[in-house]
Image (cartoon, rainbow over the protein chains, first blue to last red):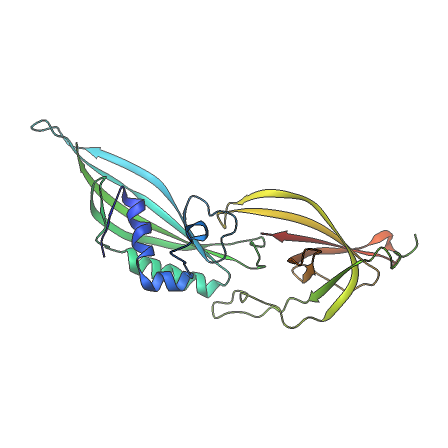
Length: 152
Length: 118
């Protein structure tokens, strides 16, 4: 099921869209990308609950000593998914599905080599206001820690 | 202050009371409304300027429109009750109640402040 993508976030989103259980649970229409449920930074208008948004946080690069004209580096960081659903139990269940799909997923991408990818924390963020077309919403926040090795 | 003339109350809405039904995790269920408690209620629906909102929690770019809805009678609408209004183009709008004000405190006109997010 692995597909080559330009970078880790693209590979994560591609993997989610290729996971039948995730696609079904989010009611993702893979033929209608304008209303897709998976977005970077913020979902767009018209996207209906539930959805998932990722952001990249706390990245750090450790470079090794150059040898034979090449430098290896390892980037560590967090990809945070916020999963928003109209009911609390649903948000929790969708979060579990995303974790199950992405933990140790064999992702391939052009921008490096994945060494490690696992969820390290999950929490709820209270939604105080009404959501689009819904009086209720619950946000499940899941942090995935990753390590990517690169050679330049 | 006289009550609003019936000619002013040209719109019709359906009213729903919030039922605080919980899911297994004690959060509100996704659609916490039962059947409507009033239908075809005369009122005046007054939309305000829409706003662009990026909600930091729900992480979605959203259009928010506030409404004042004027009624002749007090329907005891409270926060998170719902009004459904069908506009002239046939589009259904779900308006969520912010609160009700007894205009001028005389029991003659009731302004319900609502919000719609799309």
